[in-house]
Length: 295
Ligand SMILES: C[S@@+](CC[C@H](N)C(=O)[O-])C[C@H]1O[C@@H](n2cnc3c(N)ncnc32)[C@H](O)[C@@H]1O
Image 1 (cartoon, protein in one colour):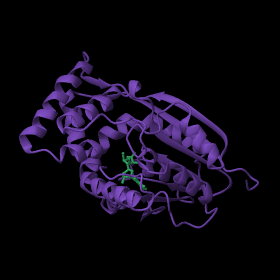
Image 2: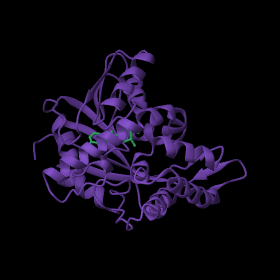
Image 3: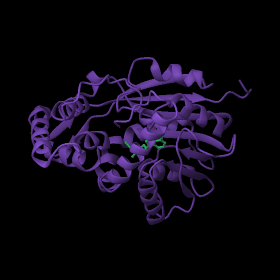
Image 4: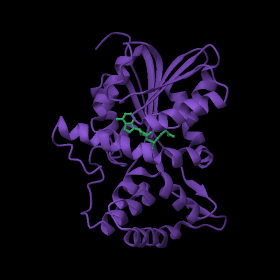
């Protein structure tokens, strides 16, 4: 994520190549933590599916699907008469989504390697679309939303899930600021395109939905604490699968990277509870609908 995205062609392509490589590397770690991720995101995922209008028999597009945890939830909801296309920029993580769908016995899931800003699916070919914790990584999220709008039939619903403001996601802020400090890099504007918190600015994502042509746009903020047995469980998750943090620390030698992890631990331990560890997170679920009449 070092690439400048100011250059509209080369910058964006380099950014996406870097993003793809990061998630190819983090794919096994993200997949290995599916149980923790599911416990963390189970309720918000159910809400996302409801808000997108996912129900039995529908064709659903899952954008930036990762290793497919929410894909399986959607596949279950649409049933054997429905269909899910899980898409992701990273071939490695998309392959895991395919394996997971097969292992779970879903014959109604297909996977495809695709940039969410250029999905290559036919116009109006889906009834609903979801995107869980992916849109904030797009250098041009408006383009991503326009693609979802184009892919939906008139009347079709979408719901995306992104992180909200930095203050509501303090662990992410701690991880990012500590990594940047140890890498000798300046603090970043958290709302810079393509970053973890880039769509958390109040009102921003609703404005993007409307610009993309969606109607009935509404955002719900949900508390989604990440509850784990200890801070070390959280760090194990971050160390194997939090690709934006890993990308920054990759530039450091082993001892310097360990110093960064150690400082992160010192700061994150403050979220310990009587029962374990609870990292606060707030998520924004934004829903919209492609209008019946073309706009
Ligand atoms: C935090 S993971 C979320 C994965 C999955 N949706 C989940 O919630 O478990 C972010 C995903 O976004 C994908 N991604 C990032 N930029 C993308 C883009 N431009 N198009 C499609 N997928 C992208 C990454 O490859 C990664 O799989």
